[in-house]
Image 1 (cartoon, rainbow, N blue to C red):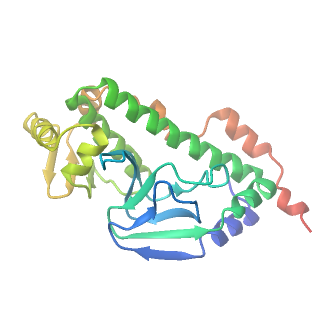
Image 2: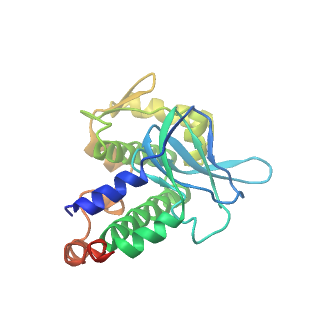
Length: 244
């Protein structure tokens, strides 16, 4: 999908209001009313849900390019929280700009909906991991997933990437204890599939690691949009040209 000048200008306008925030800042709190929509431009955050007693489940990692508050016009309050893991740079815009996007730029709206569908697919895969994969499979699967997603936005090179998370956060993401996470990472190192140096992870054999995690990248839809969607995007009229 090649963007028109009008589409490009609209997206640039949406990301005009940029804010920098430190690590451990709440971008969204579970149960609060939605405010602005945010686009992660730089840094990491986590989406998480918590029980009243404080136990937490990390449902996904928010990486550059991901959107926070996409469903703000469908729900009054947030059903999950978003907290930064690193210092971040986010662009913010009013929720009604989503309506404007759907009215004026149907191609961008379709691409945005596709992005939302990918997010749901990732969460569904995480549910499968927590419910059915072993500890070793869960950990291997998550490392491969992050490698694929980070490679897409230019943040992984030669199988290496920075994983700015504690073992506690990994435990919350994978439904394991910290002790179990430690043992599992050590086992993956011992069999030569990964190397860990501080926050840097090096995947030595992504095919074998994918096999261990029973990883099938189909759910990520990383390479390109389905041909049917691409055709629709190419054929959709640019309504902005008809706007007064």
